[in-house]
Image (cartoon, rainbow, N blue to C red):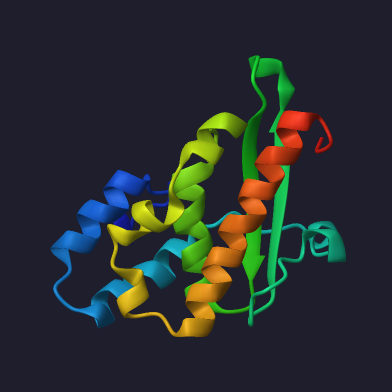
Length: 151
């Protein structure tokens, strides 16, 4: 499994396949943390109140960039958290959403997609709520990109 030593971001299908290879949650937990370590560093300027995700127990920042030149607005994200596991959850969300158009993002059923990893069985209710708060923020940014209010 190259994902532990590879420095490129994992795609969501790759993450699902890696999860299936790992037998217990402790190994999966370490894998999620390792995914978070691969996130690009978040510039200090992006650690601001506008980028802070509300509804997360941990500190979470999410910055969205819109590329309007591709016809439909296409979104990319950078983010960070002060909690290692949450950084990993951010990496998983990025694997699902980065580079997709606003319409593609809004068409994704996050609960169903994330269900492939069985995360809810192993995350605390607070972490699950925080994960859904991040999804809500990404969806909100996609809505704003569609209306031209997010640049």
